[in-house]
Amino acid sequence: MENQNIENTQDIEMTIKTVETLVEHLIGEYGLVICILITILIFKKGIEKLVSSLFMFWGSDYDEDDIVWLDGRPARIARIGFFKTTFFIYEVNDGKIIGGSKLVVQNERLSMLKIEKPLPLIDLNSKQIK
Image 1: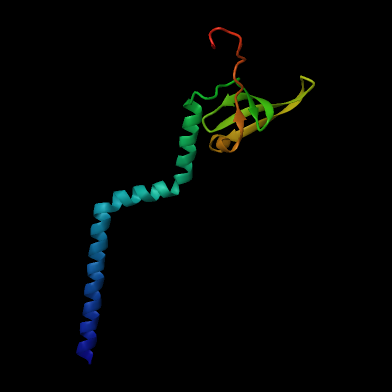
Image 2: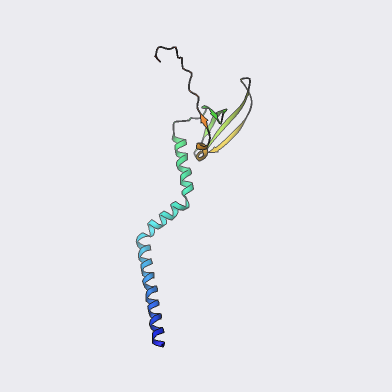
């Protein structure tokens, strides 16, 4: 009985050593890859913000001082930053600006807004159009 307990203990120790060797081998070989994957998972949201900021900051769809319609209200893009964009939203009454407000939006949230950029007026009677 005592010999059997010793053999079981030796088997358990051998199994533990085998597992330790396997883990050391895997970490040694794939440690860098595992660390990179963990880092990407931790900073996933930050990476998404960075990418959306790059598209807005370096994109050519909108520029500073563009007049746009923001959720049905006239607005002007005051500043396009790396992480956020600033709008001046105007209150208009009878064609006159009577007030307004400042709106700062994180660039990754711009896709949730309805932003329309008016097209320049076109002379439909022009011969260039026909």
